[in-house]
Image (tube, rainbow, N blue to C red; front, top):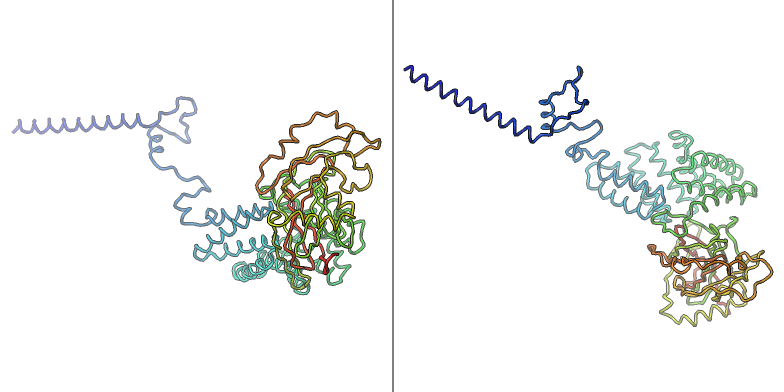
Length: 529
């Protein structure tokens, strides 16, 4: 019996020793797999926080707790919140809108609306996306689409945010602007005053309130409240200068609207000062060699009263032109009866070489109904598909007795013919051809230099070594743009043809870099003989 007990106890001691040995091996393996403790003095035990090697191993084995403000992947999937795809699209679209990249903004907002439709009970996100998309369409002059979106968004915002909310004020502002553009001034005034009241109470002095006041001043001017409109526009411009908005071009637009209003009311001194501030901003922000997709869109309109809107008057072929940063865009229309011929001349009026990126011009017909304005794109006619030479000769026969138009339709390589004073009348070096398809033209100096100084500094050009950039800089690749390089007072004149639908008014749009030049024309009703 004693022998049996001794065998049992020895077997117990043996199995216990094996179990202890296996534990030691596991600890050794775990120690090798884990990083060692730091050997420097930073790993010193303190009275407040004693961290041993066992605690270090336990911290590595357990999952780390999320830091304050962070959300785990599971929570991110469950809670849409600030980490939802909608907020990602919407915030990116807001940045594009502030930078005036309207095409990219529109694409992101459409994606955000699709995301909002997939989620249940997401009317708030849908309303905000619709408001911003309607503002994009308003900037792109798509008034019908903008009006429909503002109506839908207003019904949603009244239910979600309330009738006196900032979002409702955005809808009232957009609807007021559409009614103003379409000549419904009474409805525009009621809606605009609602927006002013809400923004004044909710925001106080701000950029949004200044935008509403500028629109209200224009409405009051249209309804013959002259003194009230002038008082309103003065306060609005002061507020705009204090709160210029996310883009400095917003301030330039406000100054331009205010200057045009004061110009019509005979306040020429104030209008001149505001025009000067406006065009200084535009000259600084214009990027004539870069596309609007990256730099944001700028609009340069030919408007009566603007000092940059110049014209050589003519009963048949008025030549209108605009200038930014010493780059002049001049254009005229030539009625060829079944076709509408367009002459566009781009001139460098400065004393430094410039590189420009030219886009494709478009011509629009406009209705004369003030209460139902319509704009329709006119069909472009490929010059290679018609008898281009005959059409060129037809334009020349009609315009050759106008020296400025005759100079535009000639290719000249001689330099030094531009006078130092007065209008150059397009007498500098020029390349004429189909717009955007000009061939290379050598630059020659005249054999005899004139005694009268020229703004082209021709007397010094013979001493300057030819820059290789003159030849190679025009080969730069820019999306949807044709790159050209112009020396001082050098021009590129192009011709285009459109199907003539006999409209009474037309609008020509010429993109140069990130600037869209808009020049309106009135059409003839009878054939030129």
